[in-house]
Length: 75
Image 1 (cartoon, rainbow, N blue to C red):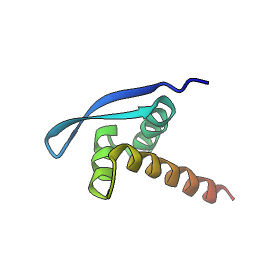
Image 2: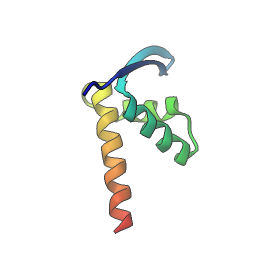
Image 3: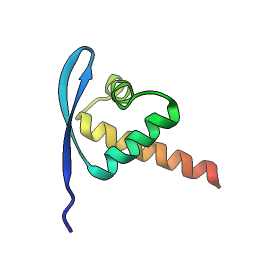
Image 4: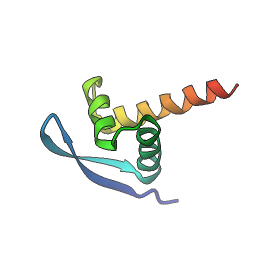
């Protein structure tokens, strides 16, 4: 099974950079930002501000944490 990675440009602290994520992560990232009433770029800036390692990995961990938190609320 092939998983397509998409590269998107974002602006963090006034600097343009690119982020590579699998399509499913971009979809959920958009859903999270929409639910919070902020842009995807603003959400990525927040994630970037609190990260210790690779930005793409930090985004994936943020998404996983958000999904687990939502799941816990459903129980």
